[in-house]
Length: 107
Length: 115
Image (cartoon, rainbow over all chains, first blue to last red; front, top):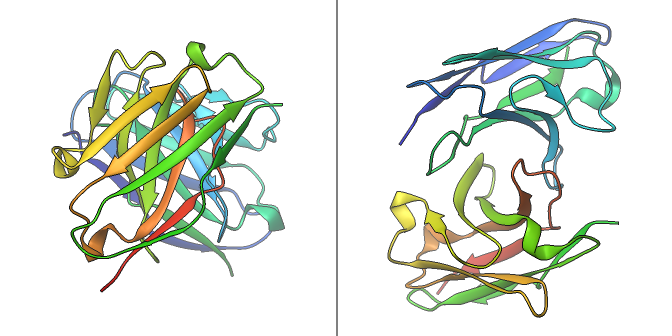
C-alpha cells in the first residue's frame, strides 16, 4: 500500500499566519490527493480535491498544490475557525491511505 | 440536499459481528460509490474500504480483508458495512462518505467492542 507521510504532526500558529502542511507519497500518485479538515466530534470536511481544486463553499484562503509525490496545503491567513486537524488522502490506487494528520493549534 | 444518515451506536462482544448502515438521499445513489472510514478514540482517520454503486467492485484495507464486507441496496439507497470477528481494536467511530472525492459524510457510528 502507498504510504502517506504528513508533516508536521502538530503546528502552533496565530490568527493571520500563513501555514503550510505537506504530504509525501511513497510512490507516484499523479494528482489523486485530497485534503480534509476535522474538528473534534465532527465528521471530516473536504477542502481540496485533485491536489489543487477547491471544493465548493470552501474559503479561498485554502489552497493546494503538488503532483507526483509531494503535495502541500496552504492556509493563507489563519482564521479562528481553522484550528482543527488536517488529513491528506490518496486515492490513486486502492487501498486508499490517509496521512497521519496535522493538528493545528492556537499559539 | 445530499444526506448520509447512519445507524445508531453499537456495543458488541469480542468475536461478534456488527453491520452498520448508511442511507443516502438527495442524489442519485447509483451515480456515486460509498467509502467507509474509521477513527479509533484519539487516533487519526483510517480508510476501511469502498464500494461502487451496483456493488460491482469493492476494495478494502489489507488489515481488514476477510473480516469486512461492503454491500449496497440500490432499492433503498443504503450502503452497509459488516465487520466480523470483532476485536477490541475495532472500537472506533465508523463513517460512510460519498465518493470520490469524499464530499458528503455521514454523522458517524460508534462501535464499541468490549467484554
